[in-house]
Amino acid sequence: MTNFIDRRLNSKNKSTVNRQRFLRRYKNQIKKSVSDAINQRGVTDIDSGESIVIPNRDLSEPTFHQGDGGVKDRVHPGNDQFSTGDRIPRPPKQQGQGGGQGDASDSGEGEDDFTFSISKEEYLNLLFEDLELPNLERNQLDKLIEYKTVRSGFCAEGVASNIDIVKSLQGSIARRIAMTASKRKQIKVLELELQALNNDKHDNIQRKRDLIAEIETLKNKISKVPFIDTFDLRFRNYAKQAVPTSKAVMFCLMDVSGSMDQATKEMAKRFYILLYLFLSRTYKNIDVVYIRHHTQAKEVDEHEFFYSQETGGTIASSALELMNDIITERYNDNQWNIYGAQASDGDNWADDSPRCQALLEQQILPKSRYFSYIEITQRAHQTLWKHYQQVEESHTNFAMQHIKSVADIYPVFRKFFKKNTKSAA
Image (cartoon, rainbow, N blue to C red; front, side, top):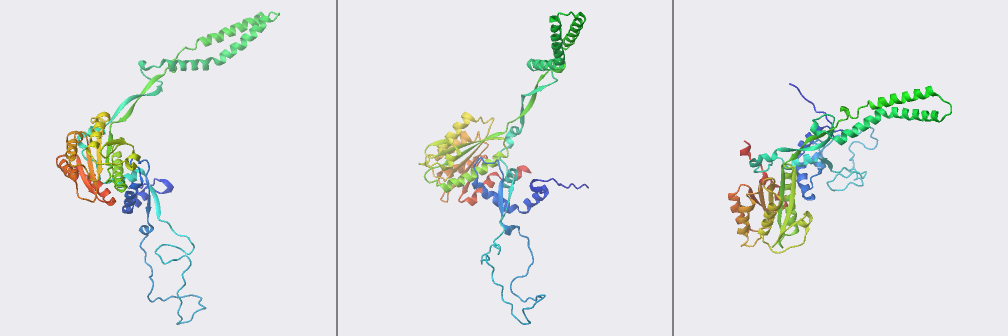
């Protein structure tokens, strides 16, 4: 049997094994901090990890110590103040020691709660363990990676059809200049000397002949340098580049009628953040489309989606119609994995709820991978909930849940995306 000891180091010279052991030991406290941090993030903010704070009381080790009171025998060496039977007065409280339960000290110093950072991957693992995306089995081909051929510079070897003439000639010119530069300099020097002898009145025929012969020899050597050599040839190089085919679009639909206050919108935001983070773990490319509606629906950006003050009555079908139009125009359901999430307090015109049911069943759900509906209210369910219940009974890619408070958001999300143990088995 072979035992492997992992001594790899990460930041601050802490071993990876120790870090993982620490995460396992304080998993409950870390998961609570992770879930609480959701409200501080934007919907598409997944580029960083998270700073986790664990109270010191949760990190302390159990110890044995003597409590206050009781009978205690103590020996004080070098005692020159007390005799047998004397009562020792209680020591006075030092300045800075209050009556609270904190860890204040007499020196004015204390110890803060333990704070450390986890990576993006650790953050997502803790947040979404034991969860999975439903209805992925019918589109497994989307998980394959396609490749496209792209230019990738030049290489010295290749087929004749890929020769790059310009690059090869540039290499040829550089090679010939490098190989003949010294000889050309010598020719120039010899020609200047020959010209000087021709201008001289004294005939030095033999020297002229020698210069002419030497110049011709150098020119012959230059002429023997080939115009282009196999060394100069450059071929266009091509490489295969991975093109991820798994891409998804997430539609966020929210009712912004007069009954939807800011607290309700914040709860919807936390749900949308969880959904976006979860989808980003499966798909390389993911788009987010924000649709807000009252009597009319409009596509907006994230800030306007959550914080705009525009309000009105409620016609929920307007958001579903706009979602269907955007899918038709921009997101081919054969190429995109379409997800939808609708948040509302349940108020809707009674005559409009059947229209919502028809749009979901006939237009949206046949194109969508999964559609979830959350009703954020403490009142009784309205007609929209009743019609959506009929949709849920007949479509496996539709789910709905009721949220009353912030504490319900993460449990509801886990119900939406819990693993199907039957299919896994």
